[in-house]
Image (cartoon, rainbow, N blue to C red; front, side, top):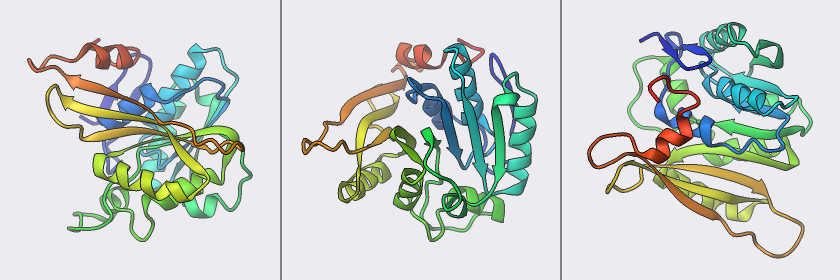
Length: 244
């Protein structure tokens, strides 16, 4: 399928290494949008997360702007096309740029920085350079991505991520030595009774008080034991999926 149709927009993804998937849909539906006016989508791919947030912020009646950042030229062009064809194009822009160069050029001003980042730090090479870029972190790890995001974040802003469970644990531990903390930790269970495979994460800047904030923990299940969609998943994503 080269185009994925949602209730209020369509996403073509044939020129993107990583296609529309459940991880991004969960993240885009879950990320906190209260008091959000400016959004940065890092590694936007097809523009899916940016479009989901545009829909949500428009429904809230917010005056907002969304920046979608993508290093791969083909994916950036496709994201721009998807956004131009949406009803929120005037409030969105796609920038073809490297994250670590971009962060040096902008002042902190984003209320929400969101990403479904590459998951793998190495391993078997992918069949093409585009997919390699999308899947592997090369010399930059997840911590470097989050710290880059921190440099562009408003003092009251938040960073929303999705990662495999073990990588989420590693990142949270690494952040214990920074000025960020994990405000929310949502374990994603693919099927009822199984162990969590993914984690939705929200990071915030530590408050000036000496008290360490507690992490809000919860979980979401995608499928029930009978292979039907779980009500929690339906309620979270029904504003987007045609089938709900």
